[in-house]
Amino acid sequence: MKKIAIVGAGSMAEAFISGILENELIDRKNVWVTNHSNQNRLRDLEERYGIRSTYNLQTLFENADIVILSMKPKDASSAIQNIRPFLTKDMLIVSVLAGVSMKTIETLAGKPLAIARSMPNTSAAVGKSATAIAVNHRVSENQLEMTKKLFETVGLVTFVEETQLDAVTGLSGSGPAYIYYLIETMEKSAVEIGLEKQIAKELIVQTLIGAAEMVKNSSKSPKQLRREVTSPGGTTEAGIRVLEEHGVQEAFISCIKAAAEQSKRMGDALCSQLQVGKT
Image (cartoon, rainbow, N blue to C red; front, side):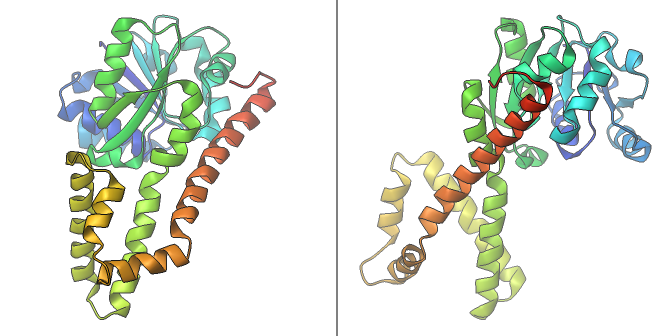
């Protein structure tokens, strides 16, 4: 890859910048970023990472072979229409816009494009994202490989069909927030049973890391692992019984379904505004 142009300068854009440079994917002088109007943010990214920023779109996109769309989904319509004169069929367009289909991006751009639509999560900031990617038929083998290398700088990568991305959004895209919610709840309970908050946090975090490693490295299912910890008449059984009484498993299933459905609604709403068909 020769040059990466990033449109949007939020936390996901910064995660990419950090991952790209840490993995030496491309020279920092060939990473360019812009946003709508926050010059202080661009200046901060320049000073911290040694990359370049500009509001001159001609300069931003000149010789760029990868364009990353990382603005907020609600700003996608105006942003893409603003940059469309500079987008070409030779560029790989990488989207991290939740709910925005590849067909919608092409409609906004007013031309056919090679597009990789992704759903990373905020753990990209520490190189631990779980990212699912769908590509359209215009993406070449070389561009597919570039996409994989790009997202591997921020974590794990898997390729899916675009129709599966709403489900991915509900599961792993929003997933970190569910885990933070669980940690928040465990911290509150720890304080109520007499533990100091900092000690509780350390224990909770290590417990989650250990459990995740067990699931990752064991051939046993999560259900099997849970049962092995749950001795009849023991403390774990008492705790699990309360979770079941409160329907926690069902609540999590409903939570993930609701997030997936919201992702689909967001995409459908934008499609409706543009009078394009659903994808």
